[in-house]
Image 1 (cartoon, helix red, strand yellow):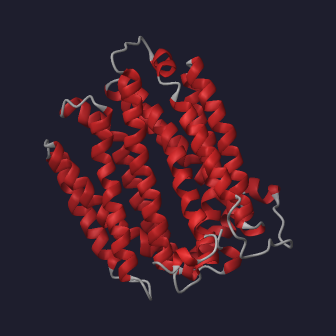
Image 2: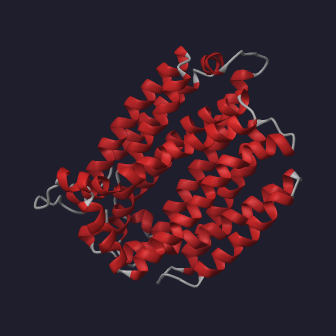
Image 3: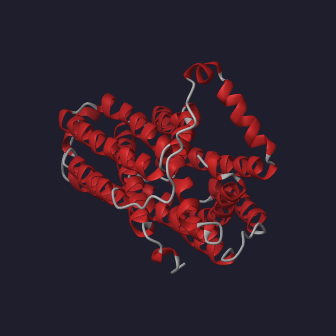
Length: 361
């Protein structure tokens, strides 16, 4: 993997990915922790599910224009523009915190997700451009590990800041709580600003494509959707890899939405640091699993890890509802993440390897 960091532009790319995930997650953690502190039971589950839904919906609605823009323009340029939007959104988020505008802050998770929906195909397409086929699996392992480190670090960092801002204070509703933690918004702004600086240090391996144009009428009518799904389905490897990734992340979203309420109602745990910490152990596991997959795929894509990872995920999920020990649950989430990392790294690499360069987005 040392060869990767000798490639011009790869190190700032890794830093950019870290901060992009770190900032996106930061606001989501603030909103989720506010929901956790103020609401209980079914309302808490529904609101948490809505937050996750707002984050995922743009990826479904915008995958055609996002993929088009990634293929049409230089991917570093797309990531730079996305980073500019992040700076603007974090300033708006900070304004919402200070004014106690919980509903607006809640909706801004959707705007951050729109930015991510355009950033993501450019990010994954850039991996192949900058690393090439030979280092593709190793580069995916690094990207996956760094992204999860960002999620893990952000989960703890923002939860600790959140609890520290509320220490010894009381509040009547979500708006009052939001004003108490408002200074955290400036942390988001600072991280977003550094992300923008790193975006301008990316190299540009490929020139933009001037020939293709986006037809909004075809998009509205669903013609692009049919065409893209047909193109995806034509390549069985890409199609099955997408199905595998979709199932893993769907399971992850269900756990993120339901586990905090489970911990509060059945385990009696009210600390956001502990609840988020247990779930963050899955992030630690994904780091290890990604590194295992990267090492096993140094010169080729080790597809044997896919069934092994799937089996491990099933076993971990079977035991989660029955455990009451915090430490055992943390260990089980770690196991879930480790096998998840072993699953998603080769699946991502297979998609990039089998996609033509002009269809990477």
